[in-house]
Image (tube, rainbow, N blue to C red; front, side, top):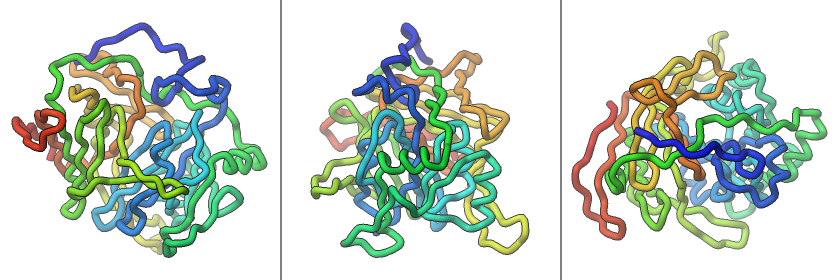
Length: 325
């Protein structure tokens, strides 16, 4: 349920989203991945509107957190930065990107490090902001963090292309004009296709970003990618630390791609956390992801994703399709 175009020229477009870089020279440098808080006290977040790609992953209490990935783009005001979780290591590992976190339990640190992920904590390149209470007040400057990575001798190589980029998707428009993620009994995220992008609502409210000058906008993405995996409880092998939710991202599972009000279904697969995700259609062909900033939901297959027809500009919905649960 995809179509292909001429191969993208990765000398001028991003390996992460297929979009042209302001400065093509920036495509030859490392990516930086930063863990972002999504607690109510962390909203509105800052800087994620400038990310080249974003992951969303379930954590404790039915909440989610984000991983904002910066390759040719940067943010000098990004946050709030929060702690790492086991799923993060499996997601970040293929990017060869330093992973910026506000600490983690020792056993989680060991788990992430075992995936050959270099971590950066609260060091030069991070700072506390006024007007927010800890732990929701640690922010980051990705330009400074690149210098920290240089000082530590981390590799400065571009990430591989994590999906096969091309597209656009086949099929009728507006079939997926609204996409609803039932993350937990306490968290529902809705994306609505409007003005050429998917715009985000969190539990029925506009989910906004705010910059250092107080300017606001609604969080949006060009493409929604869903990687479904089993949600389970991860625990300290030594039996000392606290257990936390994690989502399986090794093996295979259902994949969904939403773009321009259309949807394509398939399967993701990989055998090792160091491998990129391979997306396939039902007949085994590549499930091609259209160019555009992607929001990648590592979604529990025990929950539901639904989508519906929606006329842009109108709130009414019809023809809802349940895809998982």
